[in-house]
Length: 136
Image (cartoon, rainbow, N blue to C red; front, side, top):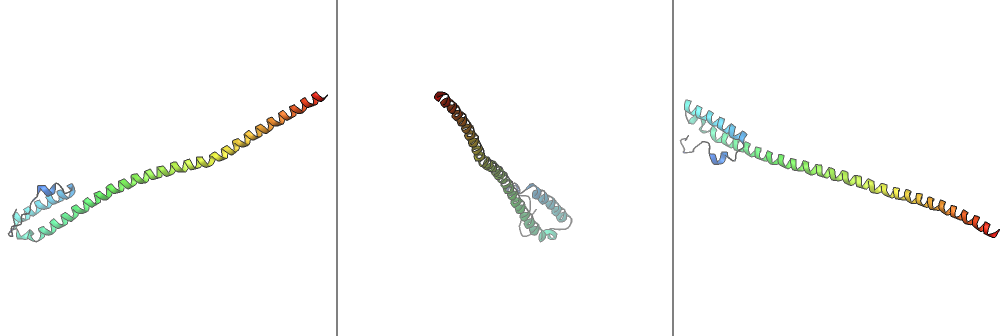
């Protein structure tokens, strides 16, 4: 449809493809309502209103696009956060295991030392008996 000053207001397939579905649906509904008003009254009824509505719809579409970008960014950040938490938990467990290991090694060393000391005492006692038997 065309207004007096030569501006054409109609769905443009090139721009509607880039427009979100919600905004495109709203624009179609508003466009049909404008056509009804023009058919019932005159073009002058919507002449001043149409550019304002078009600007609002363009802004709305822009906000929807920004919102989608933010949602994608949020999902990426959530995934990064989950990976960082998993990595943190894994490193925490490894650190705990590494800290417990020296204690285990120390305990193992003490057990080996006690075993060797006990065995040494047995061998010493056995040598003493042998020496006693040899001298008698």
